[in-house]
Length: 213
Ligand SMILES: C[S@@+](CC[C@H](N)C(=O)[O-])C[C@H]1O[C@@H](n2cnc3c(N)ncnc32)[C@H](O)[C@@H]1O
Image 1 (spheres, rainbow, N blue to C red):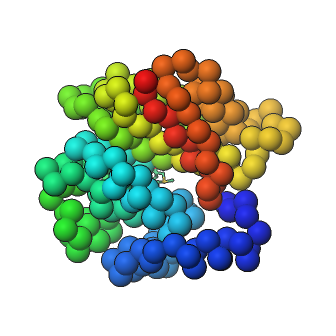
Image 2 (cartoon, rainbow, N blue to C red):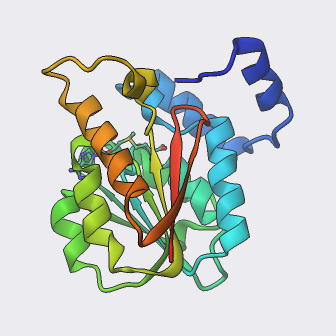
């Protein structure tokens, strides 16, 4: 979802550095062959993730929700030289496409994929993260936040995607709409967490940035 008028969104895209050949092909391949391709971050948000990573120069990144590996590449672009990105997805069918494109980047050896449920894998990770990107099932966002919090260094960042949920966060919520309820409650949880400073960026479907104090 993009909240900007189409011509303004196009203007923003046109004045953002291109994503490069590998990401462009991965984007096209995902739209041609994978279900729910809109889950992929895409050009503008991908460049934003890459820019954040370049600003932070993280040694350890955790991504929850790999999909076809697009955002993993964007984030890995800013890794420190000896850095590593750990990414988790429960869908093993996407592994081959992600690995095929990672192999074409200089970061293939820095990306570590874990296949399985994030809620089971995160507690097994013995790492301190500089940057976490939460981009999986909305109902578990709060749980992922709790599971990663102590593993993020003070001054580290937790980014969460789709926090505007196509604008449903400001509309009357249907009783059976568990995803919207989960996103609203997640946003409130971060906003009232005195352990972080936060900003909600209305980029694409909304990115919430929390900095651990
Ligand atoms: C929105 S997509 C991720 C998009 C990707 N970050 C990108 O920008 O290209 C969400 C992914 O989360 C995965 N997922 C959903 N629930 C999960 C869970 N409990 N554990 C691990 N992965 C999960 C799905 O299989 C899907 O690939």
